[in-house]
Length: 507
Ligand code: XMP
Image (cartoon, rainbow, N blue to C red):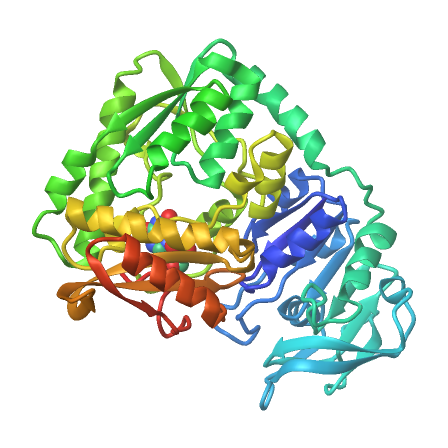
Protein backbone atom coordinates (compact mmCIF):
# COMPACT_ATOMS: atom_id res chain seq x y z
CA UNK A 1 0.00 0.00 0.00
CA UNK A 2 0.89 3.65 0.44
CA UNK A 3 2.60 5.17 3.46
CA UNK A 4 1.69 8.75 4.34
CA UNK A 5 4.14 10.61 6.53
CA UNK A 6 2.29 12.89 8.89
CA UNK A 7 3.64 16.43 9.19
CA UNK A 8 0.55 17.57 11.02
CA UNK A 9 -1.83 18.76 8.31
CA UNK A 10 -5.49 18.57 9.20
CA UNK A 11 -6.05 16.92 5.81
CA UNK A 12 -3.85 13.85 6.39
CA UNK A 13 -6.64 11.48 7.27
CA UNK A 14 -8.38 12.60 4.13
CA UNK A 15 -5.44 11.48 1.99
CA UNK A 16 -5.56 8.02 3.54
CA UNK A 17 -9.32 7.77 3.17
CA UNK A 18 -9.25 8.83 -0.48
CA UNK A 19 -6.66 6.17 -1.26
CA UNK A 20 -8.57 3.49 0.62
CA UNK A 21 -11.64 4.46 -1.36
CA UNK A 22 -9.65 3.50 -4.47
CA UNK A 23 -9.33 0.03 -2.93
CA UNK A 24 -5.69 0.49 -1.92
CA UNK A 25 -4.43 0.24 1.63
CA UNK A 26 -2.94 3.44 3.04
CA UNK A 27 -1.51 4.08 6.44
CA UNK A 28 -0.20 7.12 8.26
CA UNK A 29 3.10 7.19 10.13
CA UNK A 30 4.61 10.09 12.08
CA UNK A 31 7.08 12.03 9.93
CA UNK A 32 9.95 11.06 12.19
CA UNK A 33 9.43 7.32 11.72
CA UNK A 34 12.75 5.72 10.83
CA UNK A 35 13.53 4.78 7.24
CA UNK A 36 13.64 1.11 8.34
CA UNK A 37 10.20 1.33 9.88
CA UNK A 38 8.79 2.95 6.75
CA UNK A 39 10.37 0.35 4.49
CA UNK A 40 9.19 -2.48 6.73
CA UNK A 41 5.68 -1.64 5.52
CA UNK A 42 6.86 -2.45 2.00
CA UNK A 43 5.24 0.68 0.62
CA UNK A 44 4.62 1.03 -3.10
CA UNK A 45 4.70 4.77 -2.64
CA UNK A 46 5.32 7.39 0.02
CA UNK A 47 3.35 10.60 0.43
CA UNK A 48 4.80 13.51 2.37
CA UNK A 49 1.86 15.38 3.76
CA UNK A 50 1.27 19.03 4.40
CA UNK A 51 1.81 20.52 7.82
CA UNK A 52 2.21 23.72 9.77
CA UNK A 53 6.01 23.49 9.91
CA UNK A 54 8.41 25.70 7.96
CA UNK A 55 11.75 24.42 6.70
CA UNK A 56 13.22 27.61 8.18
CA UNK A 57 12.11 26.80 11.70
CA UNK A 58 14.80 25.78 14.15
CA UNK A 59 12.90 22.60 14.98
CA UNK A 60 11.69 22.07 11.41
CA UNK A 61 10.07 18.71 10.75
CA UNK A 62 12.68 17.00 8.55
CA UNK A 63 13.16 13.51 7.22
CA UNK A 64 16.19 11.46 6.34
CA UNK A 65 16.94 12.40 2.68
CA UNK A 66 17.87 8.78 1.96
CA UNK A 67 14.15 8.18 1.79
CA UNK A 68 14.28 9.62 -1.73
CA UNK A 69 16.75 6.93 -2.83
CA UNK A 70 14.83 3.79 -1.95
CA UNK A 71 13.33 3.12 -5.36
CA UNK A 72 9.95 3.97 -3.93
CA UNK A 73 8.03 6.82 -5.61
CA UNK A 74 7.61 9.89 -3.40
CA UNK A 75 4.84 12.46 -3.64
CA UNK A 76 5.22 15.68 -1.65
CA UNK A 77 2.11 17.70 -0.93
CA UNK A 78 2.26 21.33 0.28
CA UNK A 79 4.86 21.29 3.07
CA UNK A 80 5.95 17.97 1.56
CA UNK A 81 6.91 19.87 -1.62
CA UNK A 82 8.86 22.56 0.25
CA UNK A 83 10.64 19.87 2.22
CA UNK A 84 11.56 18.02 -0.97
CA UNK A 85 12.99 21.16 -2.55
CA UNK A 86 14.84 22.04 0.64
CA UNK A 87 16.40 18.61 1.17
CA UNK A 88 17.40 18.00 -2.45
CA UNK A 89 19.22 21.28 -3.05
CA UNK A 90 16.51 23.65 -4.18
CA UNK A 91 15.45 26.81 -2.37
CA UNK A 92 12.42 27.79 -0.36
CA UNK A 93 11.54 31.36 0.44
CA UNK A 94 9.35 32.75 3.13
CA UNK A 95 6.03 33.77 1.67
CA UNK A 96 5.01 37.38 2.05
CA UNK A 97 1.34 36.86 2.52
CA UNK A 98 0.73 33.21 1.88
CA UNK A 99 -1.99 31.80 -0.34
CA UNK A 100 -5.20 30.38 1.05
CA UNK A 101 -8.23 29.03 -0.76
CA UNK A 102 -9.01 28.40 -4.40
CA UNK A 103 -6.41 29.06 -7.02
CA UNK A 104 -5.89 28.28 -10.69
CA UNK A 105 -3.24 25.68 -11.46
CA UNK A 106 -1.63 25.48 -14.90
CA UNK A 107 0.36 22.47 -16.02
CA UNK A 108 3.68 23.54 -17.60
CA UNK A 109 5.15 20.13 -18.31
CA UNK A 110 3.36 16.87 -19.02
CA UNK A 111 4.01 14.00 -16.62
CA UNK A 112 2.42 10.78 -15.40
CA UNK A 113 1.09 12.70 -12.41
CA UNK A 114 -1.07 14.96 -14.58
CA UNK A 115 -2.44 12.43 -17.07
CA UNK A 116 -6.04 13.27 -17.95
CA UNK A 117 -5.89 16.51 -16.01
CA UNK A 118 -6.73 19.62 -18.07
CA UNK A 119 -4.10 22.27 -18.70
CA UNK A 120 -5.72 24.57 -16.17
CA UNK A 121 -7.92 23.58 -13.23
CA UNK A 122 -9.00 24.82 -9.82
CA UNK A 123 -6.95 23.69 -6.83
CA UNK A 124 -7.00 24.35 -3.09
CA UNK A 125 -4.02 26.13 -1.61
CA UNK A 126 -3.07 26.64 1.99
CA UNK A 127 0.54 27.69 2.49
CA UNK A 128 2.84 30.46 3.57
CA UNK A 129 6.33 29.56 2.32
CA UNK A 130 7.00 28.67 -1.31
CA UNK A 131 9.64 27.02 -3.44
CA UNK A 132 11.82 29.60 -5.20
CA UNK A 133 14.49 27.47 -6.88
CA UNK A 134 14.27 23.97 -8.32
CA UNK A 135 16.53 21.23 -7.05
CA UNK A 136 18.82 19.70 -9.65
CA UNK A 137 17.17 17.21 -11.99
CA UNK A 138 13.69 18.62 -11.39
CA UNK A 139 11.39 20.20 -13.92
CA UNK A 140 9.04 23.07 -13.30
CA UNK A 141 5.74 21.28 -13.89
CA UNK A 142 3.08 23.76 -12.90
CA UNK A 143 2.33 27.26 -11.71
CA UNK A 144 -0.49 29.08 -9.99
CA UNK A 145 -0.43 32.51 -8.34
CA UNK A 146 3.05 31.42 -7.41
CA UNK A 147 5.66 30.68 -10.03
CA UNK A 148 6.57 27.22 -8.77
CA UNK A 149 3.49 25.20 -7.86
CA UNK A 150 4.73 21.77 -8.90
CA UNK A 151 8.14 20.19 -9.34
CA UNK A 152 8.84 16.77 -10.74
CA UNK A 153 11.83 14.51 -11.27
CA UNK A 154 10.30 11.73 -13.31
CA UNK A 155 13.52 9.79 -13.61
CA UNK A 156 13.80 9.47 -9.85
CA UNK A 157 10.03 9.17 -9.37
CA UNK A 158 9.77 12.22 -7.15
CA UNK A 159 6.67 14.37 -7.54
CA UNK A 160 5.49 17.40 -5.64
CA UNK A 161 2.65 19.89 -5.70
CA UNK A 162 2.05 22.96 -3.58
CA UNK A 163 -1.75 22.52 -3.50
CA UNK A 164 -3.87 19.92 -1.71
CA UNK A 165 -5.16 17.28 -4.15
CA UNK A 166 -6.94 15.45 -1.31
CA UNK A 167 -9.59 18.11 -0.67
CA UNK A 168 -12.69 18.19 -2.81
CA UNK A 169 -12.13 21.84 -3.79
CA UNK A 170 -9.24 20.64 -5.93
CA UNK A 171 -11.22 19.76 -9.06
CA UNK A 172 -8.91 17.07 -10.41
CA UNK A 173 -7.27 16.20 -7.11
CA UNK A 174 -8.68 12.70 -7.02
CA UNK A 175 -7.40 12.09 -10.55
CA UNK A 176 -3.93 13.25 -9.52
CA UNK A 177 -3.91 10.94 -6.47
CA UNK A 178 -5.15 8.10 -8.67
CA UNK A 179 -2.37 8.75 -11.15
CA UNK A 180 0.17 8.58 -8.37
CA UNK A 181 -1.27 5.47 -6.75
CA UNK A 182 -1.97 3.42 -9.89
CA UNK A 183 0.25 4.68 -12.71
CA UNK A 184 3.29 5.75 -10.77
CA UNK A 185 3.23 3.33 -7.82
CA UNK A 186 1.47 0.53 -9.68
CA UNK A 187 -0.71 -0.35 -6.73
CA UNK A 188 -3.37 -2.98 -7.13
CA UNK A 189 -6.90 -2.71 -5.83
CA UNK A 190 -6.84 -5.20 -3.01
CA UNK A 191 -8.17 -3.38 0.03
CA UNK A 192 -11.71 -4.53 0.54
CA UNK A 193 -13.74 -4.53 3.69
CA UNK A 194 -15.15 -7.98 3.01
CA UNK A 195 -11.64 -9.32 2.88
CA UNK A 196 -10.91 -7.36 6.01
CA UNK A 197 -13.70 -9.16 7.87
CA UNK A 198 -12.66 -12.67 6.89
CA UNK A 199 -8.96 -12.00 7.41
CA UNK A 200 -9.60 -10.39 10.77
CA UNK A 201 -11.83 -13.21 11.97
CA UNK A 202 -9.11 -15.65 11.06
CA UNK A 203 -6.49 -13.54 12.82
CA UNK A 204 -8.59 -13.25 15.99
CA UNK A 205 -9.06 -17.02 16.05
CA UNK A 206 -5.33 -17.56 15.79
CA UNK A 207 -4.35 -14.93 18.33
CA UNK A 208 -6.95 -15.87 20.92
CA UNK A 209 -6.85 -19.65 20.54
CA UNK A 210 -8.93 -21.14 23.33
CA UNK A 211 -8.40 -18.20 25.69
CA UNK A 212 -11.09 -15.90 27.03
CA UNK A 213 -11.75 -12.30 26.06
CA UNK A 214 -13.59 -9.51 27.84
CA UNK A 215 -14.80 -6.32 26.21
CA UNK A 216 -16.36 -3.14 27.56
CA UNK A 217 -19.52 -2.70 25.52
CA UNK A 218 -20.88 0.84 25.56
CA UNK A 219 -23.62 0.56 22.98
CA UNK A 220 -21.68 2.94 20.74
CA UNK A 221 -20.66 2.04 17.21
CA UNK A 222 -17.02 1.13 17.77
CA UNK A 223 -17.35 -1.19 20.74
CA UNK A 224 -20.44 -2.82 19.24
CA UNK A 225 -18.81 -3.56 15.89
CA UNK A 226 -15.69 -4.85 17.66
CA UNK A 227 -17.86 -7.09 19.85
CA UNK A 228 -19.83 -8.59 16.96
CA UNK A 229 -16.68 -9.17 14.93
CA UNK A 230 -14.90 -10.91 17.81
CA UNK A 231 -18.02 -12.88 18.61
CA UNK A 232 -18.07 -14.11 15.01
CA UNK A 233 -14.55 -15.35 15.49
CA UNK A 234 -14.65 -16.95 18.94
CA UNK A 235 -18.31 -17.08 20.02
CA UNK A 236 -18.80 -17.64 23.72
CA UNK A 237 -15.15 -17.16 24.58
CA UNK A 238 -16.11 -13.48 24.53
CA UNK A 239 -17.91 -11.82 27.42
CA UNK A 240 -19.05 -8.21 27.15
CA UNK A 241 -19.27 -6.02 30.19
CA UNK A 242 -21.90 -3.34 30.01
CA UNK A 243 -21.84 -0.74 32.78
CA UNK A 244 -25.11 1.01 33.47
CA UNK A 245 -23.90 4.31 34.88
CA UNK A 246 -27.39 5.69 35.21
CA UNK A 247 -26.23 8.43 32.85
CA UNK A 248 -27.21 6.73 29.62
CA UNK A 249 -29.95 7.52 27.17
CA UNK A 250 -33.46 6.27 27.87
CA UNK A 251 -33.69 2.46 27.93
CA UNK A 252 -30.13 2.13 26.65
CA UNK A 253 -29.37 -0.89 28.86
CA UNK A 254 -32.51 -2.67 27.78
CA UNK A 255 -31.77 -1.97 24.11
CA UNK A 256 -28.20 -3.23 24.36
CA UNK A 257 -29.38 -6.46 25.97
CA UNK A 258 -31.99 -6.89 23.29
CA UNK A 259 -29.78 -6.06 20.32
CA UNK A 260 -26.57 -7.75 21.29
CA UNK A 261 -27.72 -10.24 23.93
CA UNK A 262 -30.87 -11.59 22.34
CA UNK A 263 -30.29 -10.90 18.68
CA UNK A 264 -26.57 -11.72 18.44
CA UNK A 265 -26.58 -14.21 21.33
CA UNK A 266 -23.58 -12.63 22.97
CA UNK A 267 -22.71 -13.09 26.64
CA UNK A 268 -23.29 -9.74 28.25
CA UNK A 269 -22.65 -9.03 31.88
CA UNK A 270 -24.75 -6.04 32.84
CA UNK A 271 -23.41 -4.12 35.82
CA UNK A 272 -25.87 -1.87 37.58
CA UNK A 273 -23.72 0.95 38.95
CA UNK A 274 -26.35 3.66 38.91
CA UNK A 275 -26.25 4.16 42.67
CA UNK A 276 -22.48 4.44 42.77
CA UNK A 277 -22.30 7.08 40.02
CA UNK A 278 -25.13 9.20 41.33
CA UNK A 279 -23.94 9.17 44.92
CA UNK A 280 -20.43 10.18 43.86
CA UNK A 281 -21.82 13.05 41.83
CA UNK A 282 -23.95 14.34 44.67
CA UNK A 283 -23.22 17.95 45.48
CA UNK A 284 -20.84 18.37 42.53
CA UNK A 285 -21.64 20.96 39.89
CA UNK A 286 -18.27 21.81 38.31
CA UNK A 287 -18.09 20.25 34.82
CA UNK A 288 -14.44 19.21 34.98
CA UNK A 289 -14.92 17.69 38.41
CA UNK A 290 -17.95 15.77 37.17
CA UNK A 291 -15.99 14.45 34.20
CA UNK A 292 -13.16 13.31 36.45
CA UNK A 293 -15.49 11.58 38.87
CA UNK A 294 -17.37 9.78 36.11
CA UNK A 295 -14.10 8.69 34.46
CA UNK A 296 -12.67 7.49 37.75
CA UNK A 297 -15.79 5.59 38.79
CA UNK A 298 -15.98 3.99 35.38
CA UNK A 299 -12.46 2.64 35.64
CA UNK A 300 -13.17 1.41 39.14
CA UNK A 301 -16.37 -0.41 38.22
CA UNK A 302 -14.94 -1.89 35.07
CA UNK A 303 -11.77 -2.97 36.85
CA UNK A 304 -13.62 -4.65 39.68
CA UNK A 305 -15.88 -6.41 37.23
CA UNK A 306 -13.15 -7.59 34.92
CA UNK A 307 -11.19 -9.00 37.84
CA UNK A 308 -14.05 -11.40 38.38
CA UNK A 309 -13.13 -12.94 35.05
CA UNK A 310 -10.00 -14.56 36.35
CA UNK A 311 -9.55 -16.69 33.29
CA UNK A 312 -9.65 -13.78 30.83
CA UNK A 313 -6.43 -13.25 28.88
CA UNK A 314 -7.50 -10.50 26.50
CA UNK A 315 -9.15 -7.15 26.86
CA UNK A 316 -10.82 -6.18 23.59
CA UNK A 317 -11.42 -2.55 22.68
CA UNK A 318 -13.08 -0.70 19.86
CA UNK A 319 -10.04 1.49 19.17
CA UNK A 320 -10.24 2.86 15.64
CA UNK A 321 -7.63 4.36 13.33
CA UNK A 322 -8.15 8.03 14.20
CA UNK A 323 -7.57 7.10 17.89
CA UNK A 324 -4.30 5.45 16.89
CA UNK A 325 -3.19 8.42 14.78
CA UNK A 326 -4.11 10.83 17.55
CA UNK A 327 -2.05 8.93 20.09
CA UNK A 328 0.99 8.69 17.79
CA UNK A 329 0.65 12.22 16.50
CA UNK A 330 3.68 14.45 16.46
CA UNK A 331 1.73 17.56 17.31
CA UNK A 332 2.42 19.10 20.67
CA UNK A 333 -0.18 18.75 23.37
CA UNK A 334 -2.96 21.19 22.65
CA UNK A 335 -4.75 22.97 25.46
CA UNK A 336 -7.19 20.81 27.38
CA UNK A 337 -10.57 22.28 26.65
CA UNK A 338 -12.37 19.32 28.19
CA UNK A 339 -10.90 16.23 29.74
CA UNK A 340 -12.19 13.43 27.60
CA UNK A 341 -13.18 10.18 29.13
CA UNK A 342 -13.30 7.29 26.76
CA UNK A 343 -14.26 3.78 27.57
CA UNK A 344 -10.89 2.96 26.04
CA UNK A 345 -8.16 4.17 28.33
CA UNK A 346 -7.97 1.42 30.89
CA UNK A 347 -5.30 -1.12 30.27
CA UNK A 348 -2.17 0.17 32.05
CA UNK A 349 -2.75 -1.47 35.40
CA UNK A 350 -4.56 -4.49 34.05
CA UNK A 351 -2.61 -7.56 33.20
CA UNK A 352 -4.54 -8.27 30.07
CA UNK A 353 -3.38 -8.34 26.48
CA UNK A 354 -5.08 -5.92 24.16
CA UNK A 355 -7.20 -7.05 21.26
CA UNK A 356 -8.13 -4.19 18.94
CA UNK A 357 -9.57 -5.55 15.71
CA UNK A 358 -10.63 -2.15 14.33
CA UNK A 359 -7.40 -0.25 14.84
CA UNK A 360 -6.77 0.07 11.11
CA UNK A 361 -10.19 1.35 10.18
CA UNK A 362 -11.69 4.78 9.75
CA UNK A 363 -15.13 5.46 11.18
CA UNK A 364 -16.93 5.10 7.86
CA UNK A 365 -15.17 1.79 7.32
CA UNK A 366 -16.18 0.60 10.80
CA UNK A 367 -19.77 1.42 9.92
CA UNK A 368 -19.57 -0.53 6.67
CA UNK A 369 -18.13 -3.50 8.56
CA UNK A 370 -20.98 -3.21 11.05
CA UNK A 371 -23.59 -3.31 8.30
CA UNK A 372 -21.78 -6.21 6.65
CA UNK A 373 -21.89 -8.08 9.98
CA UNK A 374 -25.63 -7.62 10.16
CA UNK A 375 -25.89 -4.92 12.81
CA UNK A 376 -29.01 -2.86 12.12
CA UNK A 377 -28.29 0.29 10.16
CA UNK A 378 -29.90 2.43 12.81
CA UNK A 379 -27.35 1.29 15.39
CA UNK A 380 -24.40 1.59 13.06
CA UNK A 381 -25.24 5.14 12.06
CA UNK A 382 -25.94 6.45 15.56
CA UNK A 383 -24.69 9.86 16.53
CA UNK A 384 -21.70 9.88 18.87
CA UNK A 385 -22.43 9.90 22.57
CA UNK A 386 -19.88 11.25 25.05
CA UNK A 387 -18.29 8.95 27.63
CA UNK A 388 -19.59 10.96 30.62
CA UNK A 389 -23.04 10.73 29.08
CA UNK A 390 -25.94 12.65 30.57
CA UNK A 391 -23.66 13.56 33.46
CA UNK A 392 -22.51 16.50 31.36
CA UNK A 393 -25.90 17.19 29.78
CA UNK A 394 -27.64 17.74 33.09
CA UNK A 395 -25.94 21.04 33.74
CA UNK A 396 -24.70 21.62 37.25
CA UNK A 397 -25.56 19.11 39.95
CA UNK A 398 -26.87 15.78 38.73
CA UNK A 399 -29.61 13.79 40.41
CA UNK A 400 -31.85 10.89 39.46
CA UNK A 401 -34.90 13.03 38.84
CA UNK A 402 -33.08 15.43 36.51
CA UNK A 403 -31.59 12.51 34.59
CA UNK A 404 -35.05 11.01 34.14
CA UNK A 405 -36.46 14.31 32.89
CA UNK A 406 -33.60 14.71 30.44
CA UNK A 407 -33.91 11.13 29.18
CA UNK A 408 -37.58 11.67 28.37
CA UNK A 409 -37.00 14.96 26.57
CA UNK A 410 -34.00 13.65 24.64
CA UNK A 411 -35.91 10.57 23.58
CA UNK A 412 -38.71 12.69 22.13
CA UNK A 413 -36.26 14.83 20.14
CA UNK A 414 -34.51 11.78 18.70
CA UNK A 415 -37.80 10.02 17.88
CA UNK A 416 -38.99 13.07 15.98
CA UNK A 417 -35.72 13.39 14.07
CA UNK A 418 -36.15 9.83 12.83
CA UNK A 419 -39.81 10.36 12.07
CA UNK A 420 -39.04 13.41 9.91
CA UNK A 421 -36.03 11.77 8.22
CA UNK A 422 -33.74 14.37 9.75
CA UNK A 423 -31.61 12.13 11.95
CA UNK A 424 -29.06 11.36 9.24
CA UNK A 425 -29.03 14.98 8.08
CA UNK A 426 -27.42 16.16 11.31
CA UNK A 427 -24.19 14.99 12.94
CA UNK A 428 -25.15 15.05 16.57
CA UNK A 429 -28.41 15.93 18.28
CA UNK A 430 -29.46 15.87 21.90
CA UNK A 431 -31.18 17.76 24.68
CA UNK A 432 -29.51 19.58 27.56
CA UNK A 433 -31.21 20.26 30.88
CA UNK A 434 -30.48 23.62 32.48
CA UNK A 435 -30.59 24.12 36.23
CA UNK A 436 -32.75 27.15 35.54
CA UNK A 437 -36.43 27.33 36.35
CA UNK A 438 -38.82 29.71 34.72
CA UNK A 439 -42.46 30.58 35.04
CA UNK A 440 -45.08 29.23 32.71
CA UNK A 441 -48.78 28.60 32.57
CA UNK A 442 -50.48 25.30 31.92
CA UNK A 443 -54.25 25.18 31.89
CA UNK A 444 -55.08 27.69 34.59
CA UNK A 445 -52.07 26.78 36.66
CA UNK A 446 -48.84 28.66 37.14
CA UNK A 447 -45.84 26.42 36.59
CA UNK A 448 -42.27 26.90 37.72
CA UNK A 449 -40.08 24.30 36.05
CA UNK A 450 -36.81 23.52 34.29
CA UNK A 451 -35.62 24.74 30.91
CA UNK A 452 -34.49 22.28 28.26
CA UNK A 453 -32.23 23.21 25.37
CA UNK A 454 -32.43 21.35 22.08
CA UNK A 455 -29.00 21.10 20.45
CA UNK A 456 -28.15 19.86 16.98
CA UNK A 457 -24.85 20.28 15.19
CA UNK A 458 -23.54 19.64 11.70
CA UNK A 459 -19.88 18.83 11.37
CA UNK A 460 -17.41 16.66 9.54
CA UNK A 461 -14.70 16.28 12.12
CA UNK A 462 -16.31 17.54 15.35
CA UNK A 463 -13.51 20.09 15.63
CA UNK A 464 -15.63 22.81 14.10
CA UNK A 465 -19.40 22.68 13.78
CA UNK A 466 -22.38 24.75 12.81
CA UNK A 467 -25.82 24.58 14.38
CA UNK A 468 -28.34 22.67 12.29
CA UNK A 469 -30.88 24.78 10.45
CA UNK A 470 -33.79 22.54 11.43
CA UNK A 471 -37.18 23.65 10.10
CA UNK A 472 -39.27 25.84 12.44
CA UNK A 473 -42.27 23.53 12.02
CA UNK A 474 -40.18 20.62 13.18
CA UNK A 475 -38.81 22.51 16.18
CA UNK A 476 -42.34 23.47 17.09
CA UNK A 477 -43.42 19.82 17.17
CA UNK A 478 -40.44 18.90 19.34
CA UNK A 479 -41.04 21.78 21.72
CA UNK A 480 -44.75 21.02 22.06
CA UNK A 481 -44.18 17.37 22.71
CA UNK A 482 -41.45 17.96 25.30
CA UNK A 483 -43.45 20.53 27.24
CA UNK A 484 -46.66 18.52 27.11
CA UNK A 485 -45.22 15.10 27.80
CA UNK A 486 -42.30 15.67 30.13
CA UNK A 487 -43.24 16.71 33.61
CA UNK A 488 -40.59 19.05 34.96
CA UNK A 489 -39.93 21.05 31.77
CA UNK A 490 -42.04 24.05 30.82
CA UNK A 491 -39.72 25.85 28.41
CA UNK A 492 -37.63 24.73 25.44
CA UNK A 493 -34.88 26.75 23.74
CA UNK A 494 -32.91 26.00 20.59
CA UNK A 495 -29.13 26.38 20.69
CA UNK A 496 -27.91 28.53 17.77
CA UNK A 497 -24.22 28.58 18.65
CA UNK A 498 -21.50 27.31 16.37
CA UNK A 499 -18.20 25.75 17.39
CA UNK A 500 -15.99 27.64 17.93
CA UNK A 501 -16.54 29.66 20.02
CA UNK A 502 -19.11 27.37 21.66
CA UNK A 503 -18.51 23.63 21.94
CA UNK A 504 -21.00 20.99 20.88
CA UNK A 505 -21.68 19.81 24.43
CA UNK A 506 -22.54 22.36 27.08
CA UNK A 507 -20.06 21.13 29.68
P1 XMP B 1 -17.23 19.29 22.18
O1 XMP B 1 -18.26 19.48 23.25
O2 XMP B 1 -15.83 19.34 22.73
O3 XMP B 1 -17.43 17.81 21.67
O4 XMP B 1 -17.44 20.18 21.01
C1 XMP B 1 -16.88 17.29 20.49
C2 XMP B 1 -17.34 15.86 20.37
O5 XMP B 1 -16.76 15.06 21.42
C3 XMP B 1 -17.78 14.46 22.18
N1 XMP B 1 -17.33 14.45 23.57
C4 XMP B 1 -16.85 13.37 24.19
N2 XMP B 1 -16.68 12.11 23.75
N3 XMP B 1 -15.81 11.51 25.84
C5 XMP B 1 -16.19 11.18 24.59
O6 XMP B 1 -16.07 10.02 24.24
C6 XMP B 1 -15.93 12.75 26.34
O7 XMP B 1 -15.57 13.02 27.49
C7 XMP B 1 -16.48 13.73 25.46
N4 XMP B 1 -16.74 15.05 25.60
C8 XMP B 1 -17.26 15.47 24.41
C9 XMP B 1 -19.00 15.30 21.96
O8 XMP B 1 -20.19 14.56 22.21
C10 XMP B 1 -18.84 15.68 20.52
O9 XMP B 1 -19.22 14.61 19.67
